[in-house]
Amino acid sequence: MNCNLASSTAGKLRLATVWLAGCSGCHMSFLDLDEWLIDLADRVDMVFSPVASDIKDYPQDVDLCLVEGGVANSDNLELILQVRERTRTLVSFGDCAITANVPGLRNRLEGAEPVLRRGYLELADGNGVVPHAPGIVPELLPRVLPLHEVVPVDLYLPGCPPSAARIRAFLEPLLRGELPAMEGAAMIRFG
Image 1 (cartoon, rainbow, N blue to C red):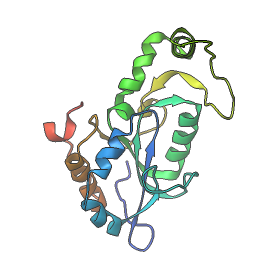
Image 2: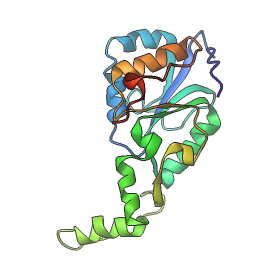
Image 3: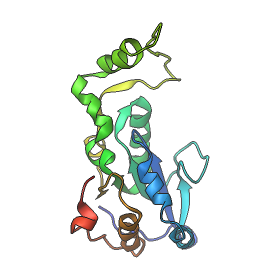
């Protein structure tokens, strides 16, 4: 893991956040950093995030990326491969990214077809139809995967979601070029 997060542009770290298959709770906790976000903005350039920009393409040369959610469909898979290729330090952000958590409950149904059949045919009010529109509706993967089963992950930040205090305690050392102390229930508890 490359923890040397020396800033790349104008003394600022290039930070990204990504939302895959999850509920956005981790991003909501990130926003709960409240006024510390103003301090953070002085130290980072937010170059990609569902909560801070409308940029559609993941940029090159990202120093640090927090990735929320598991890898559940073809779009998630394509994005996480791009993120890993273009990011120096990748963080599994929250329990869904670390274990597949709630989105991974569909794994018990053994494949995408039973999930689609149940959701779109068996539970339909009338004439159910399984969506199939390649390029428009992403294809489900057979299983929802935690990030580390798809790409190398550098750091893990558990929680469902991690609290704003935990996120801040995790980020502050990284901004100084140090590893966060991931010890004690306040930092490593799942759920």
